Image (cartoon, rainbow, N blue to C red; front, side, top):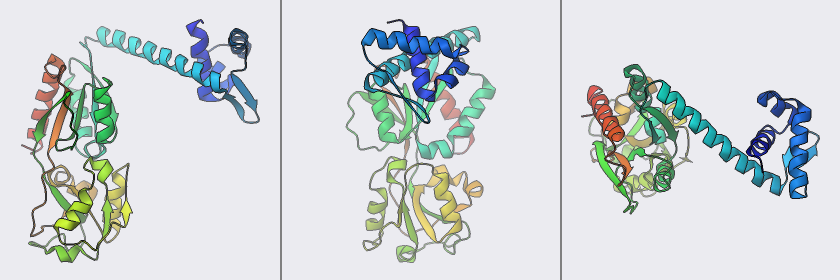
Length: 303
């Protein structure tokens, strides 16, 4: 089947409208209607259901639309490669970044990289650490910047520490505990605890911290996954606390209006690592990326 028909079907299904798809593809509506008829004649069945609010795909229509999307993705990659070559870029690095790093230090890193004009392009994916490791294993990423101490027995991957960090309990900057030293763990028993295990990549971190602090009877009031900026707002506006990486967040305390609690008990390490596949770790682009990361982290005081 002509690839053009599949890509046109993919756009129709994505937009849920033949009219909108025609506008996006810059063709006439009758042209797309003919495309749909050609496909349906070829397979001997309907690929679209027409309803009050537009069109949806049938089972076979969805399968064909997915094939069309793959063709569009491949076409976009080819177009990107051509543009990179025209602009003197030697290639592209696919980088995965965990949500906590994305909300704190990595935005400034990529901004600086744009100013410095690297010799390669970036494709950045932000997901939880476990999903990024899965992407690495399926060759959908070149590197992932995520917690080093992930309990994943990944023999096919290589990891190295980018900078050392540790866990700390954070509260809003106006919390009575924010300015104290040598705070006893029991002082946190009346706070509302927020758990962000999946976001941070360290499952069970909050529960383990509560047990370490002797607060076995305390349970998190909110279990959060997703945008960590929401957590910072909750800390700022309520009597809440959360286990977060100390040095990562320390750089941005004023921006997020949060502060670490100076506890009597030291919490666990939470180092940040650069994960790659073993066969790809020696690529020149990755070595250059590592050099840039080290320079940036040194400049903001993480070394």
